[in-house]
Length: 134
Image (cartoon, rainbow, N blue to C red):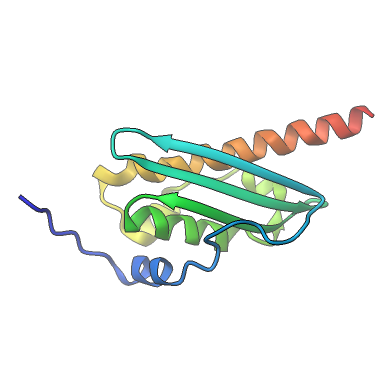
């Protein structure tokens, strides 16, 4: 039996305007990439960040997943772009989940965003640590 899923206006807005979909186009001081998957439903996310100094200058993603996941990535990029890199360390997806009205049964897919952003933060912290050791 096919399940009918309704999407709120925010999901439709971000899903149909994927401004951050694709790859980073410019050069940045630091370029980072995180790749995460959720095998039960085949969701897959590649999230890239371009960092200049202490600022997330650009974000881009490639995704395989449901409209909620696509919209969540677009919303995430919108919220984090042009913010301090430290925002990567403090990301919680609860606000995104609430804004998009993500059903509980899809929350595991949205948690992929937390994993991807945590990977970006770890990579940035490691790169910063290596730079200060020089």
